[in-house]
Length: 339
Image (cartoon, rainbow, N blue to C red; front, side, top):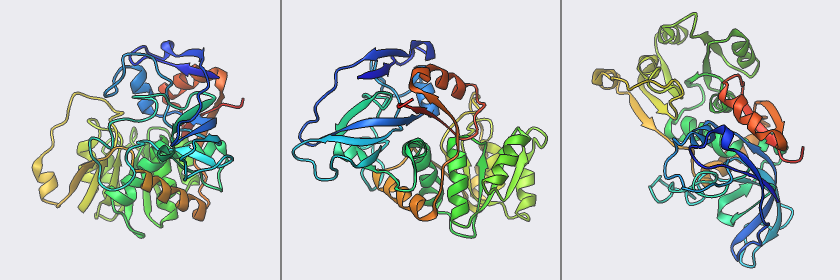
């Protein structure tokens, strides 16, 4: 079968197209023909050698994947041949609270991922794909989709009528925008580009802020919420934005930290910023299989179609990596394995 492999730290230039032997599924495994795979910033981090517990040998990258079950092991009970499935970010995190053992491994980081014509893994590592989505859009759920779900409705516990601040227009932020809008939540989106803010409005953003022209954007958040601040901040910036996010959150608000795309060398947080407003600062990593199943149902009921920026054919996978690294995207970057 056709596949790409990469060794952590080799950089995008280390992405190598290879031929791999097809595998038969074990007793509790399924074999899936992969139709689409989506890229995430974690895949760039792996290529740069910045990911945790990385193996010392090349593996097939990417965690996001959609495909059709083409063979099942003799003990498999959850799927049958012909089922449309997507990967679950952490195969061992089925439900309940996070633990080190549940999040020790994931596709495309500690073992082979989805940038291949086929994948064989435990039946526990997949869920049925949304009926309402095609291959390209369904492939975006396992990482960005479930992370947004966790940030909003699990860690953030936002309710209909609540408010959320979304930093930037990457995959997680736009997923969160579409989920929040469907749930009746007031949404504020930031970006440095007016064009992207206009597109965010079209996706349902209640308000937008250009953080280049409004560098003290936390004050604009307070103005837009009549001084109340937001209930939840989906914080993807990290060191460069966290202090402002704390100010933008209202009393008892939650800042859900999921990334650090702004870089930086650390941040100093004044304890009073948390204590005075009884605010919560919580970090998350993707989500459980149960969360992913909840997301699938929500997507089907609300007919949500994830924002996809650009689709690359399988043979141009390195260009997809470069495009994501360039930060020009609005939504997800997907590789069509059939093209």
